[in-house]
Length: 164
Length: 429
Image (cartoon, rainbow over all chains, first blue to last red; front, side, top):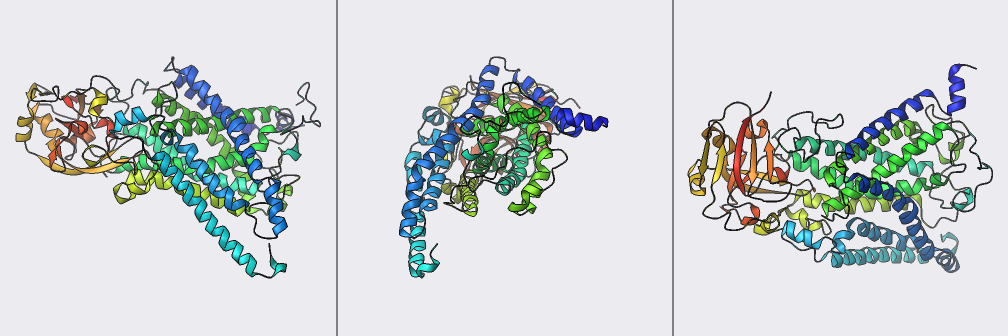
């Protein structure tokens, strides 16, 4: 067995894999040392870093997957199959996803979480964001509803055998 | 590599079992397409972020805001140019806008690979262990950078740490992990984009990828649920989300009629600010009283000699007018017509010569940007002004009355407001 083959057998990949990862860890390590320039902050920074992973992978993602399953589980599928017409799931899911995305990104403005800071900084208040988010949500669902009605009308116009 | 107490053939119930993941949309091709978008977009955000660090000229004065600007990761490669005057509006507008537009792509990418988080056995080899550690830095770095950036532009300081230092070094954690991820996965991505889905299983392994103990869990569901939406519809949704967020960022960066399209952006449709254009700090927030900025105000200019000038004396000096943007690190900008005295004329009055940097000190009693230093590129530029008027009228108190710095292509906070002192010093060459 050549040395490289022995290395692969023990390590699980080629030497380049190890070199690339060690280089990356070294740079990340230097960056973490940089965080220590603010010794009072380092604990909070590390907590936020870990919370970002846990908050996304083990909270946010399971939560929206669960909501999706509750909303668009077998019930919706079956009703579409029964009626033999257009599956409504994407027409509900897409505007819901887009509305949720806007909420996820702009919730501090929408719920005025920094209203005092914002007013002091900019001289303007954070009012109106909630209404505009709701309105945009309404418009997206309405547009989706129109698209669904069009798809439905087309499906009804086709002979039974061609219905999706 | 055998991990004691872990039976590779008997995963615990739930997400560790292959049958748990049923979405028919997941697969190498979806992941590769989203990965390709991130491969183009993330470097744009990273490079513009590093350029922003350069634009702050952390090597001068107190511009580094307490960071040790001489460290190995503290890139400060060149003096920041003054042309075009919208340079920083462009780079920082891209940083924030492309960053926002990548949010749905990042979320979809993470969704597409989530089954891999619950691989069984959790560790197959030393290589696999190291790669998973690196992925923790990658995912954590991405989410940390996006979350802190997005909260910062909305001024919601929920985190109890200093944003600039945390975001800067966090970027390096992310960049380091991103680079190695690209190196390890580029071949897989290219192969997945080239190959028809059904042939992927038979494709040969990439030479850098983890081999021992077999390949990782397939992204394609073994027992897919019936499709309720096409992969094209999912990608279209991600694209629509990106476009919605792109409009928010672009609207507040480009301004003009586009600003009203940015209906959820912090400096979008919501309203402009005093005199009809935005500020990032009001006089109240900065603790400026009308008395301190009133008739008794004098500007102290320090060079070879010092002199004190009243506002009337400044107005009696040659006045120059330029259209210049204020470009905020938070991603918004606004271009206005500023009039005032050239910084280089003030420098000449003080008798200072050579390659001069200029430190402006504000009446502002508290806050990070009570002082800022401009480099010799800015001081020498004819359009760098101590502005006294804007759009043909006197500055308002919120916009920095009695006098403020305005200089082309510098970050907005370096255009010090309520200036009380200007110090011209020869730059070390």
